[in-house]
Amino acid sequence: MPGQITLADGARLRVRPIDPADRDPLADAFARLSEQSRRRRFLAPKPRLTTRELEYLTDVDHVTHEALVAIDETTGHIVGVGRYATGHVGGPVADMALAVADAWQRRGIGHALAVRLVERARANAITTLTGSTLSDNLGARTLLDRLGFRMCSASGGVLELELDVARATPPRGHATAARAGSRAARRASAGRAWRRRASDDPRPCAWSRTAPERSRDS
Image (cartoon, rainbow, N blue to C red; front, side, top):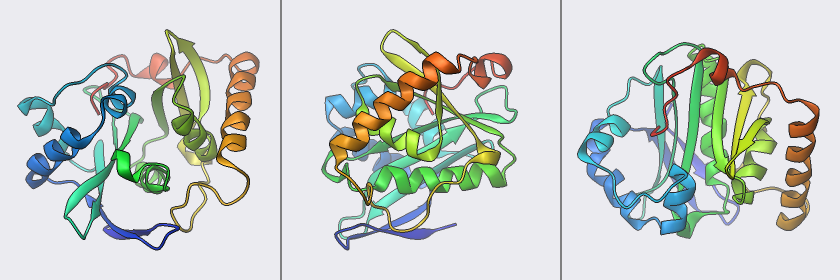
């Protein structure tokens, strides 16, 4: 499962599963996030991670709860984290979340981690991945659109999304943001796609039908 991400500029990051020894490095990575990045990750202001949260986020079973970290080998810092978790009820539905250090954003790291998470979810019999993002987070919306997520609800500035893992065919290759068109054009296209999906297919999210105790701190 460990591997490497090669960015468009040639930079390389090591990717591996998280483990309990990452508690302090993860706390350091969180401390380096801007206030906006923390808000986008947790959908609300988040000044710090508690000891209990750090334990939960690093001591995972890699089946019902998986987490991958991207590491800058020149500094040893964690610069990206992707995870899914089924929450307390378990089952085939898991919530996915991503966070990337501010200095490394818009370079394809989130996409590369998400592709690997989809593969891990499929291998671990997860049938549906869900996610939440703020409506003004156009970067996340574009990424999720490329992966095949569909929007199933929107409320209070938060979009609820889901992906049928069995049908997902995420693109492979270098971890680049996108290879054709401008970033602005891609984001505008993603915005139109979300609006179409919200109006044309109002089916509720899978988690609302099968996973009453959804994990928000995954």
